[in-house]
Image (tube, rainbow, N blue to C red):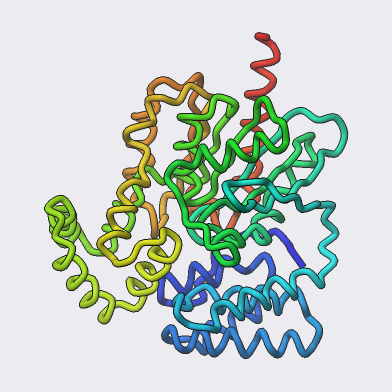
Length: 383
């Protein structure tokens, strides 16, 4: 079952493994995660350990644990591995067997020639606002809905949707992610006949939500949880300053073959880079690393931040291993025309200094809720 936890644990010496192990603590026991971590040294171990533990939990009818162990196994699998689809299907089937004690309904939002799944939690008591939520690069709605459902207890209708390049639209319908995020957000607002809303984007969703708000006037309040001003810069950070500069130059020159050869060499030496590029190509629909990096360059907020006129809450994490800290400050500087601006940089001391505040997401929820209430009350007083 889902439970809020506080504390970022040191399960594994590898930063990427350790983050993912902490990520599932809301659904898995700390002892199970600790034991799994002790058996993992590389990507092959990750798949084997998580898969075996998922099968054991399933046999023992521990369906919630089994679901998220399959989810953990799925995470680091390459797109060509047939077990990736199997793990996703097992995750969905086992998740559906659990009574999560969550009053949530699923609706299908028409989009292009298919649909986007949306999960709705109605407010307790009087409705004060609608909060539309989406994830980013690699999350599923089933893991996020438990985080954001708490807003419903405070008068918010919560509408969480998976857009193109995410979850079901990507895996089952083949939809690829678009930088024109106002289009899927607009489809959600049309479907639910919303004249206005607050929008919360999580992880890469912080970038997507900002991009959507620049072109969708029905969005009145924006929360970026957390900052992600420039996706390509996040990817280039892994290479180091010198290699990142070379890569940027090669992309400017259109040197497709050189970029692709360099990435083949890099991915052989660094399995995490291999996974990141593979997943990125899958999400974006890119045919090769060159096209993926060019797509990643479109995932930025530099050109559009000045167009935002909404109330804006920017969240950041001091020890984020995925997003460079300077993006928190540069994003704040470029939001020069917003109606109001607030920010919060979470720290290790608060157990919330990691990406998306894994370790103390409850604190981030409290900050977001307080900001929404204060902003809505201020607007009500002046209307």
